[in-house]
Image 1 (cartoon, rainbow, N blue to C red):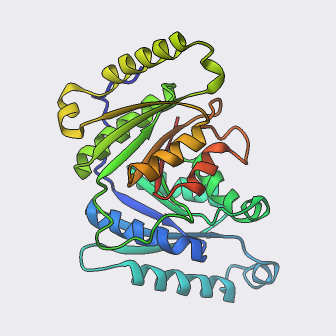
Image 2: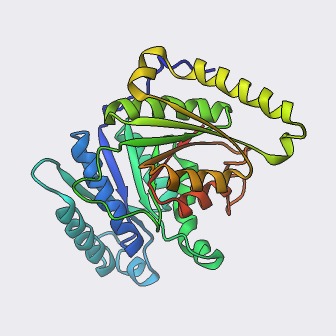
Amino acid sequence: MPMISDKPDLNLEAVIYATDFSLGAQNAGLYASRLAGYFSTALIVAHAFTLSQAALEVEIDRILISQQRKDLKALLANKAAQLADQSIEAISILLEGDPKDVISELADKHQPSMIVLGTHGGGRFERGVIGSTAEKILRSTRWPCLTIGPKVRPASSKTLPFERILFATDFSDAAFNAALYAVNIAVAFGAKIDVLNVIQGGAVVHPDRLTDLQRDFYGALDRLVPQQAKGFCDPRIFVEVGKAHEQIIEHIRERSIDLLVLGIRKSSHLSFEIRTSRAFQIIVDAECPVLTIQH
């Protein structure tokens, strides 16, 4: 089990805003800019693309530059200029290749980093076109990803710092890894933490079983949060029975949560086991940004 002393490095070298220039990505850009300013780090505005057949024919001898590349560079530079201000440096980087590969490689080059993404979400068909790119990046990178879903309120000058963080946990290895970020981000922002464990309905066949599960949860939480952080973060403990997605979304609304932290792995009810994952649906439905930590 990871120890809380193994702190993730929040002295970020860069906040990487991966954009596809869609409307859904605009709010993510504002959050990325606010984060870069808050952590006093560089903002990298990145876009991954594949050359069209016509552009390939123009650039085949590597002497000429296609109009597609010129247009994307100009569009990206303009986006970076819009997000920059006196307190942060915004750099535009055009990447050629699959977003899940080149964005992850860019984050590795600027470690420790945080990737910020936007997603439309939407229905099943729309997610197949738009949401899949964000999902693939989340699954491919080892760095924390902040995803801004379609229901997240627009970022403003008052967006940061986050005041209340929800850490949803099933006490898997992935959840403990995410807890390190949840606690240390709470410290960085001066935020309070809600810790939520959702017990699947089938696990409770007798009232005494629920009591046992709650006791196990409280004991695990006591080991998870260091004593010095308990007074500062004022952790509030919640144990609910039902479906994880429904309980997490309801908690976000009822408790006015500013940031949800999830640990993700390939074999839990919050996993990316299949492309239409429940974790991604939580991201789509959440009314706050979601920070995912890959295990």
